[in-house]
Image (cartoon, rainbow, N blue to C red; front, top):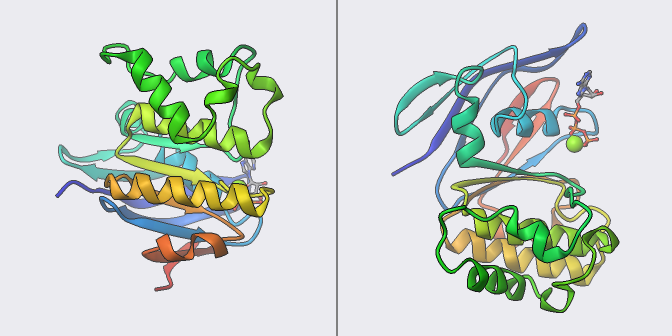
Length: 214
Ligand SMILES: Nc1ncnc2c1ncn2[C@@H]1O[C@H](COP(=O)(O)OP(=O)(O)OP(=O)(O)O)[C@@H](O)[C@H]1O
Ligand SMILES: [Mg+2]
């Protein structure tokens, strides 16, 4: 079965070593929770795993073998999707923002886009200016993008920070559905309470080291 294994990740900023020989695995359909204090290095780790940041050291292993992260970033960017805490939306309609995430070769693009919007419950905002959306709506747009992109691995950075109970519940439901489609997810979160029933394993980043809790 396909999985992604990262090994020996190191990252230093100035004199501080934020990540000290971190290893982590992403399995199909697994939801892994990542906790750690502010500044522990969670976002840094996620960005490295998604190929967005070149680490000082580290390698990954997928179907096609072992490769240094520094050389395989293009491959990581294709397979691993990072969702920022406040997802970036550009000026223009919600629909335009979603079209951007669609695979160029996808058939029935329009139908797929409408389905993704319906899935996140935002059909009514299709033509709204994306810049005017609320935090919870932005998170749902980010998940609609993930649905359209269909990444194998999804890394979410604080997906429910500052959301109200109703939005939290909606995000949890959508994550549950992605999980049932065997998307592998890693979620950095300070307030994981509402995700409890979805979480398979939990790890914690502390002093540059990653420990599996459960
Ligand atoms: N590009 C950078 N240059 C210098 N220092 C950085 C850089 N990026 C992150 N850091 C530092 O690395 C540390 C880890 O940052 P990171 O954002 O990964 O933490 P975090 O665990 O995500 O924190 P939070 O819970 O607040 O989101 C912080 O002290 C931060 O200031
Ligand atoms: Mg962070």
